[in-house]
Image 1 (tube, one colour):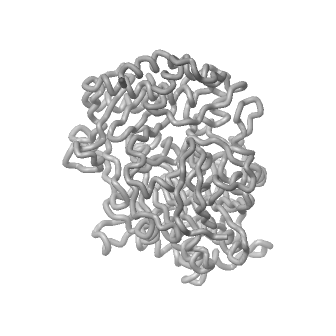
Image 2 (cartoon, one colour):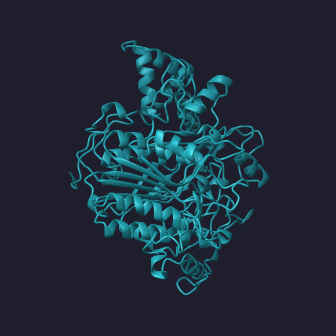
Length: 575
């Protein structure tokens, strides 16, 4: 049954909501290392967009009609972020709704070696089950594919995975495919286990193959009375395979085999037949790809050469082909399409705005969504939001399939301007941490921080070599985010921590809260806490400590007492 009327959602906790909305199908479309275009949403003002270090500019116009169709006919998240600016760490938060350091591998490693904070790195953000770790079943339980599947959805995945530990010397595609299936996906096709490295002899980007398998999944459900979830992760345009080189390779050469060899059982005389890509050219991939190259060099639309957009145009055609398939099979109106970048490319691997700020669009014709939403949202919110729209959080077929997440559903908030004005988001990369609350951004920097080394090297105001904290005002004094603007300095090039000791005090307490909740703690005996770290929450914890009127649990003792100084000081500060 399909419900299209918007409903009121009551946020009971970080991962408990009520809703009677039920979308039929869901697609998360997430290209790899794609550029941020200025016309999509306010792009981050890079710290080097100043007189000291003039860096690359964002492309002003996107020559990408299909992605823009999703944006123009859907909802644009104006303040969207990834929780961690690397391919694998970002993907972990998208598929689980949790911060990367929540992973079973991260918590086990941190607990075993006593590292604090836990390192937010790709090798630790895999979907693995570790029986000795409390709430440590990321593969068999703690991801949204499992929740969808256990509640009657057919689940599929195509493209780059990056969430399973792979042997560095060999690839067993079927073994990895079986592992992904065990983590919640019914169908796994055109799957690249991770980035293309030297051992990938002859295997390159192949958008036609990824798109063909995605459409095959969609068409398989055209006449079936079932719901589905499809996770689409193009490898394009990640530089581990040069797009300009890949587009010259026969599209019949795939990760799953070479279909171009005459006389073999798998021989295909033409390429993959895809309406919107190859079909208009008689399924000839060479003829189709020539048009991609031509469009990349076409200056008639914007007056600029788009040769750097070769991969983006290839991805855009894939979006268009999938859109056409949904429309052709009468599934478009009831399908939620979430398109996002996995992270910013200007400052990938760093917690500057250029690394964590991303475009994110939600296209759902039957959802009656507003055109834009200004609240702070993160990749950790995708899972709760999708499951909320599906109606699973309110009325699951399998109640035991649900699990706690760090994120929360934005489904109700997008219709209530200002509903999330007091929200704070946290960000993780390596040993460094950051948070954004309103216009303020606070960073906790390790001794090995790349961000700190950047700032000191370029002589940005307020930074010293032994700096451990930084504070920035990301707004212009009227509450508007300072986006890319070459006429003014980046707000992240000016550390105002010394001028705002009260805010530093407050945000250091909030960050301490986050570190304790996401740290390993007693990982083998104590389950994590998932409620959000908030100023009002810290004060209530202090009040409960003083009054002694609550029922104390082991979990609460382990959280409160390491934070006792911060709770007391924060309570005094907020009186």
